[in-house]
Length: 266
Image (tube, helix red, strand yellow):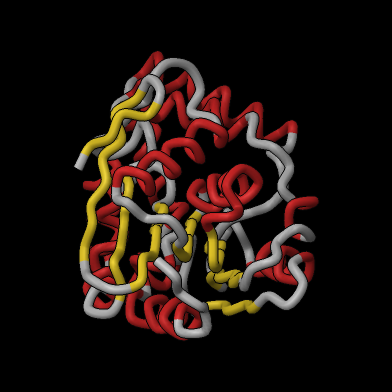
């Protein structure tokens, strides 16, 4: 399905039947990130999986793909799918988006799962790297950028034992256009500080990480967990930034255990 949101067309896939769960994928791939997790959870839950703007089949619109735009896109997807309240799961940029969604539309969330993500705003060094990356994409195209990025996002154990997962992530990333990648690099560079938001979370929250995640290491996951009162934390062994792709069975069971504690109202 495709829904218009502001200046972008947002694609989303819906699978399964049951209590609604919104799954937000990481940069720079698309909703296919969830294919193995959704196969496990869809018999029990209605899964809504958008392509965030500028990735997959969703267009980037104009200018930076800010977290504010992403959050509004998610709201429009929920409206189009006729979902009032749901559980929300965000990985990496999906987590950044989820913090913004909570600030704007918290009445729609019955539970939040932040996975392989961070709460802090981008550092000055990080901003420079993202702006430099955007310029390189503009000048040299997408493949060189993705060739350097994708191996960092997959854990060392997975790269060694399951090179097919690395290859699948690469194939999904290649769908992204240069304009989409640039828009999201610029948007992430200016993402707001969500550390103060942690103390405002008043629904059940889960924080998930991987022991081999260099982008959002376990220390960052624990930091968020400690900031959100009453939250849960799980760290997946031998998994990197794409833990849900690398260890889908374990990731899905962690989510299922969390979702079963929520009061689903649809």
